[in-house]
Length: 171
Image 1 (cartoon, rainbow, N blue to C red):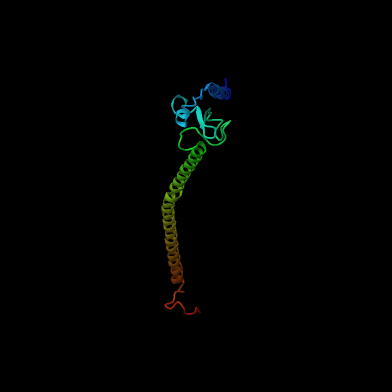
Image 2: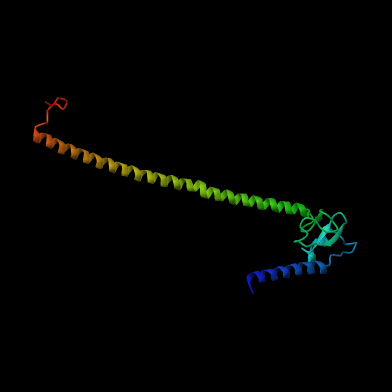
């Protein structure tokens, strides 16, 4: 069996389990003890939700009933009795967004700000190497120039072309 077949079988199994759990979840309460606290707490935790409009305990599937509850609408309490379900979802989304922004900020700081110092050191090192190469080339050029001048002076001395005043005209 391939991984695709295993994933499909697992998806069907989870879906069937959720549907069966919702069908067999007993969320009925007697009218004298019907309250949000008695609906959400206890053995029905995560399986039942309290509808504020109808004041009834209804079956709740966290996967399919994430935004509105059938036979109730949008104003229902699923995880606690203090804050309705929509507010909990918005709060979780805002918290997750802030965490993502925090991690992105940390990543940018680590990669850019700390990396900038390393790049500056590397650039300074490259500049120092380049300057030392340029100095070596200039020294080599100066040495070859002085050597060439010595050869020219020796040739001039040999043929008597060397004058005491370099600006004097040759005859």
